[in-house]
Figure 1 (cartoon, rainbow, N blue to C red):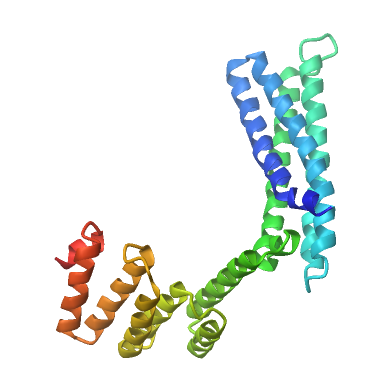
Figure 2 (figure 1 turned 180 degrees about the vertical axis):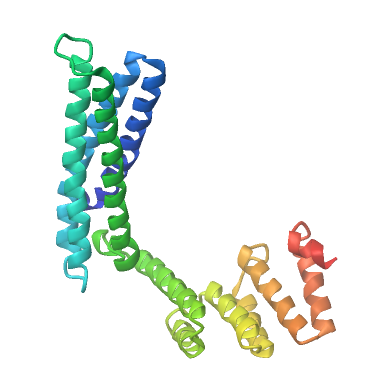
Length: 277
């Protein structure tokens, strides 16, 4: 059931929000002693528990869709282990909170402070386990892009995934100062995404900032500006700013003046343009 697998992040986020919220309400109760706060915390814990169990079932559906991704087995196991800990911790927390409410004023009660702090400790532990579960799930999303395998694919979604992959890869290689790999990747992008102006602007900025090649950068920027249809767009602005900086690197005062005039006409309220005046 793919539709149920797609609900996994929605269900998971409920528990991530509800457990800390219930813990906060439980803390406030300690200072106000208003019974409705205690009942509210129990309600939040119960709904979080239900959400965790439903999230676990939907997670198994998602696993059937992404289990073939190379290297993903161990991260999934880690995520599942913390999910199991979280759901049983939340169930225990709900039971402890219920027992505290039921017996805190009865003849069978334990020490009131000790029992309260026992429930509070359970809430702290449950919050930690839920956050760890979310952290392990985040590893699957960021490192293995599992959302792309869980959701039904369209040409648009595949294109967006390509954008994210190339962007993160470029940033990583630049941080590692692997210049040949960056150049090679930009060439690949030119082939795979020839009409994408954002990457062309990034390539131009890389050329004159990292390689001190402003002339080559200007060639790419001129191509970019010809592709852009909206002169009021953020991309058009970014391309013009990059072009101005490339002319600055070349000490080309005529080019600087022309681009500066164009920037002033189109984006007079820009903070960067104001620094040029």
